[in-house]
Length: 99
Image (cartoon, rainbow, N blue to C red):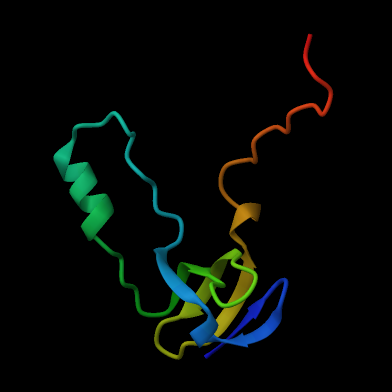
């Protein structure tokens, strides 16, 4: 399987590490709802067809990627940087010292 890294170009999948389903919502850290945590940790959708996944280019630039892959054919239809999705980045601190 070939994955096209936005930084490094086309690479063999042996350079990447699968890190799980994309788009999962983690329960609140303070939650004591055991069923919600069990569902988050153990339950998987496992759809046949297009699936959103998170991969890391561990053998290259180490970027985390959002990959849409067909689980039946392994055809990859899109690869984007994971940082471009989800929560907005933290505001950068000013280079000037605060008084």
